[in-house]
Each structure stands twice: as C-alpha cells, then as structure tokens.
Image 1 (spheres, helix red, strand yellow):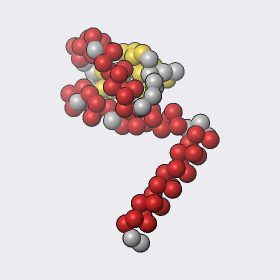
Image 2: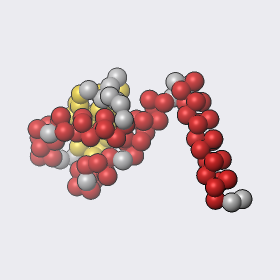
Image 3: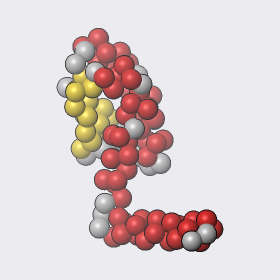
Image 4: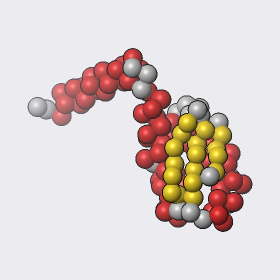
Length: 100
C-alpha cells in the first residue's frame, strides 16, 4: 500500500473512532486519559515522581503527592495547572484542583 493511500485510510479510521467515542459519550473520558498520561510531560519529572494518585472527577483534578512541600508549591500555581490541562485537552476539562 502506498503512503498516500495509508494516510487516507488512517484519516478514515480516525474519523470513525471519533464518531464512535462521541456516540458512546466517551470523548471526555479519552481526553481525561490523554491528560493523565501526559502528566509528566506537563509538570516535569520531579512532580510526576512525587505524584501518588491522579484522577479527574466532576471537572476536578485530584492530586495526591508524597511531598507536602511540593503540594504547597503546586497550590500556589493552581491556575497555571488548570490552564495547562485544559489547553492539552482542547476543552474545559477541569475547573478546580483538590490536593489530597
């Protein structure tokens, strides 16, 4: 198969998958997974290594860290984190962060 034909096939499959995710209401969950999987890339290795638990529920990002110092530092930058997450998601995925 030539490269151009393969690219067209990939685009068709991508559109079908997007439609399927929307139809089953999974589009938001896929964005959540993309954000959670990109946590280290967004926040850096130091934060990722100290992140014990990370999940999104009701537009709130829940973060449990092993370092209280890191938690305090991140609380000051909550708005920046919210912007980064929403920018990566391409949508308002979260509106608040809770530190546990």
